Structure formats: structure tokens, C-alpha cells
Amino acid sequence: MDEDLRREILLDNYQNPKNKETVNDERYLKVNSNNESCIDNIDIFCLYEDGIIKDIKFDGEACAISTSSTSIMIKNLIGKTKEEAEYYIQNFENMVNEEEYNEDILNEGLAYSEIYKQSNRKHCALLPYIGIKKILEKLEK
Amino acid sequence: MHREDFPLLNEDIIYFDNGATTLKPKCVIAKTVEYYEKYGANAHRGDYDISYKASEEYENTRELVKKFINARHLEEIIFTAGATESLNLVVLGFFKKFLEADDEVLITKAEHASNVLPWFNLVKTNGIKVNYIPLDDNHYVTLDNLKKVITPHTKVISLAYITNVLGDMRPIKEIVEFAHQNNIFVVVDAAQSIGHIKTDVQALDVDFLAFSAHKMCGPTGVGVLYGKKELLEELEPLILGGGMNESFDNENEVYYKELPARLEAGTPNVAGVIAFGEAIKYLEDIGLENIENYEKQLRKYLVDKLIDIPHIDLINIESDSGIVSFNVSDIFSQDVAYYLNKYNICVRAGSHCAKILKKETNVKNSVRVSLYFYNTFEEIDELVDLLTDKDKILKEML
Image (tube, rainbow over all chains, first blue to last red):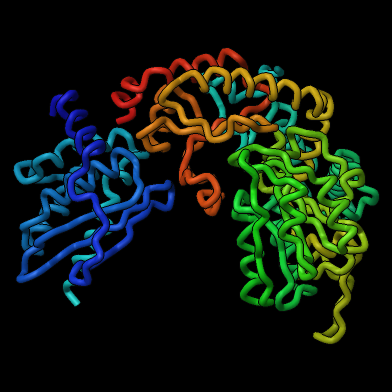
């Protein structure tokens, strides 16, 4: 991805994140995701109905990489089934961890394709995924 | 000043995180190596020369600490792993024994976690209450505000000498005088002050004082608990084992050693304590007053520049130490720290372990620059240059 485009995507999703609001609706499952090594701290709220992720919102304080990554993750997961969501997550994680991945499905998520070069920021990009995976696990039970 | 003494300063970095830990001068590093190479035996054991030498060096540091803080007795100096352990030791080993339900401990919302969480523990175990001295508009502790919250139940006041986010110095001497008139103990967390201003425990008349070696050019893993002798005598050891017992036969016949050994169970950080002695001598050669004055000049120079940058929100314009906390408007503090790191500038971002401070300042996280005597005006110029252009920060922080 072109460097300027990458920067533009990250900055836009940081300064104008989508779906950033607190939810007070019991139908939403909530998790907190925070990095032990830093000060990022976000809550993720997920509405799952009829086998589909109908909505996700998030709120909290986090750095530019974490915030933009959360915004992009949410845009990509809304409307997906649990299995589709898991496939997306797996491929995003593979990309960040320098393993093989399907780049055709990641959309704006590709903006993190070179984050591995800054090893201290990999965990920022992965922060929302820790949270959403906890929610998906709950769905199995 | 004295930059040539610090090997890490040859590595092309600008180090502004002295509140977290300070760099180590060559003499401290060399002393650590000397111990391991020349007399790396255990202290207080063994009837052979190198163990004797290790013990002598170890105890020599105790003597140096005693003079450094002007303690009355040698056995008032207890070596620990750091200020955190020292504070835990005094809260859990001393106050846990004496405080009862509804006794009150006064702290502030600007305290470091290690001067908050041990007291919270006593809320659960002893039913004490933790109350907060209100800070004034500059987030300072004043004697007037203290008097407002003192009650007949107040038993302890526990405060940082200099705080780690706002860098303000507390009027400890006046507080102690007032506290003692009212039979209240005073505990001082000197972690942020010890390497920066002169400490005289007799002049201050504090009951307990805690600090770490690594924040004063010494090694990590070494700290000190100072306590008045008659109080330390009552302090129950939290760690039991070798080195602290006189003799034992069965569970009913256990005899502990006298101070300070009683509170230093197990093999201590012998290398660290010995090297710490060098750090004390090093700082005394430079002179604490010189350090304090130079830091004040550096701080004023930095604040005068930052205050003119419209997108910088300074949290502590006024302060007595080399700590400057700020935010770049609309940019998360950690992103600012990452950006500066690209230029090899080390600053700290976050809440700095003062997690209830946000209730006072309405600022949850910040960038903290903490200065020391080896920092320069030129380094500050570089920092300020990098902070002046907000678009550059936004562009390069990613």
C-alpha cells in the first residue's frame, strides 16, 4: 500500500473513528480490552442476533494505531456471521504476525500490513481483536 | 553537567525519563563489576577474606546512606528492593499492627500507586479509612488544607516529598511539626526527591522515609526504608528466613536478630547495595544544591518555550522540580511519545502510576518530561523544535 494512502486511512480513522460511542443496551455483549504494557483502554459492545453481527460500538482512550484499528475492524465485521468474522480476524492477525494471509478480504485493514516493522506497535493494532475474540468465544457457550 | 560520566549518553539519545529511572555513571557500573570480579562472595557470612570485604563494603553503604540523609543511627537504615518495598514494609509491617477500625490515614490523589495501594489493603484488613487532603488550584498540598481534614481519628499522613506527575514539593517540615503536635505519624515517599534535593531526616523529623537507589544514579533493585529507631524496633518483619534470625529450635523458640539485620532476610542485593554507595559519593561530589539549581534553570527554560506553543496544554506550569507534564491537544500522549522516540528522545506517556490523580486534574494521561543534571538546554531546544509543528507530529507519529 502506498505510504501516503496508508497514513491517510490511519489518520482518518483515528481523528474520525466510526462507531465510537458507549452503549447502554442489554442486548449488547460488552468486553474491555487493555494493553498491560501501555495505557490503551477500550470497551467494545457487540450486538449479535440471528447468527449475524448486527452492530459493534467502542469507547475509551487509546493511541492512534489502536483507535484506527478498532474503527476499521468494526467496519469490517458488522454484517458478518461468526465464522466470517473469525476468518477476517485470523487473516488480520496473520498479516500482523508476518504469516500468510488472504489480502483480498482485509479492505482498509491492509493499512497495517507493515506494522510488523514497528514491533512495539503490533500490540496496538491487535488490541481490539483481543476484545472481539472474547465476545465471539462467549457466543459459543 | 557531567555528561562524560554517563556511557548511555554516547548512544545518541536524549533521555528525559529521569522520573522513571536515572542513567548510571561509570563509577557505579565499575563498582558493580568490581564486586563480582574481586570479592563476589556473600555478605555477613563466611570467615574468609572476600566475604569479609563484601560485608565491609555493604555496611559502608549503610554508613553513606546514614550521612546522606542525616539519620541519627546506623540501624535506622534498612535496605530493601526499592521504594515500593519500603512503603509496603512500613504499612504492612508497622501500621497494620497498630491501626484499628475507623483510624484515618491521609494521602492525596496525586500519590504514586505504592503510596496508595498498601493503605487500601489496610482498609480491608483493619477497617481503616483513607482520606484525601484536598489540593489547591496549583495541585499543591498546603498546611491550611491539611488542617481542614484532620480529625481526632487521623493517625497517619503519608505523602510524596515531590510528586511524580506534577513535580510539586510538599512542605514536609511544617506538616510533620503540626502532625506530631497531634500525635500523628508522617510517612514520606522520597522516591522523586532523593536525587534532586537535600534530605535531612532529623531536620524534617519524619517518622519513616522511603526511596530507591535507581532514581539517584544507583543500580536498580535497591531501596531504603529509613525509620526512627524506636519505631523500627516495633516493625514486624514481613520476610522471614536466613540472615534475620538469631536462633531457633522449634516454633516456640525463634529469636530474631537486632536491627537492621532483622528486616533484611535472605541474601540481599549485595552488588547493588555496594554500587549504590558509589552513587551517593558521586552525587555528593556534584552537590545536591547544584543539581537542584541547575534543574530549576532547565525547567524554566523548557516551560517558557512550551507555554508559547498554542497546541501544548501544560499541566503543571508551576512546580518545584524538573518534572514537566503536558499534552499536545487532540493527540494521545502515547502517540507523542512514539513520535519523539523516532528522534531518539525518551519521554514517558500515561498516567505515571498516579491513577486517581485524574480526579484532581481532569487529565487522565499525559506526556512527562523529567529532567536531571546531565540534560542540557540544547536537548530542550531539540524537543521544543519537534513539538512546535503539530502537523509534523500527526504525520510522523504513525
